[in-house]
Length: 245
Length: 304
Image (cartoon, rainbow over all chains, first blue to last red; front, side, top):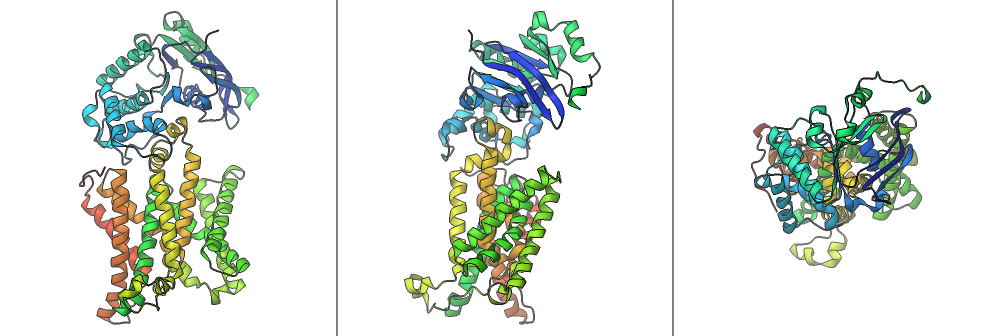
């Protein structure tokens, strides 16, 4: 039996009485680039957050490489939506990337010069090597997104979970990120992105999950990302959920 | 010289140490958008201090701290209860709990009679630095005389203890404080729980409030916590530099604020008497105003 990087079983997430995600199950592929797509409010971000334990699960189970996330934090890297943090925070690009090393640095220990040097190496990988000392608020949106990606690379994870990494970024950033994702795939990692832009799914990803509060379809992009499945995900009017009042 | 040692030095130290401990933890209150929590802490600890004093009959540091922490903890639970069970919006819950707790403290002060013997309501509200005196000082030699040092105002010991604890925790948890302030969700995914680090910040804010309350007063406390970090933020984009600068501004406010309070009446007559707590807070505010007006942001190099 294969051990999936991510295995979600019967996951339900509720906010108040409303189910944001309903009885969702997915065994992710061993490696590659997977997109989670679906309309606004379909529960894409809720899925990532529930997988990471950032929002409580109303029901269901999540396993990372066969174990609960609390035992597998070294194997995952999370990139939240860029808009979820205050970029006016007093920090440089290097400071933020170094946060990806905090777990290895360990509790109560300071960030040292060697850590900053390592952070710079990860900034180089997203072509921001010269921006290590730049205040994060002075970076463009695309550059900020790449700083977040560099922070995730610093974590040296096997499973990458990214929330809308392509939202509102420039062409250079899109190219850099796609290149990095392919390298991660070649290195045997799984990259899962919540993704908004249907037109670029085929070009960037090899697996897709179509989500609309419940699982609509999942599998290789070639066979799963079909007009029928897409219209089932987006075209059907929002179903009322009488059971959840 | 002797009068400086007996009167001005202890008072200046009390004012400055209070400004330093408040500013240090204030950096993280401002960064986590909890500035009003500092204000709340200054208010909620009052009933705890009064009850602890009535029960134990002493103003010993550990008694005051225990009472204050019990009150802070009780208030924090009450705020959470209001938010979750009664579904009251966070700032409204905080606002109602801290004013009610403070009012309870004032009532207890009046009813238990300690307002006449141990605590002065006016001092609790507006602070009192001038009564920190060192009558045992007879000259510079007293600074090295253990017997004379033992009779330094007890406030000084409390403030030094509070500053040492806050400084130690900030140094040890600096990167954890940085990551939970910037990106709490990410922090959680790397095993640094923002709730626990946040609780440490609240606890340190309570400690800072308790040790400085008698010096700066409940109302001016928030100025001491918020102004120096906010001023420092105008001048730098580096967190470490910001913390050091905020301490520099706190130091300057403490020393010059006290000097103004002493020198203005000397120069212009004693009918213009100024409370040092007030001048220190006003000076903190003035620094911030000047920093904002000149917009000196990014003017200083990064400290590493």
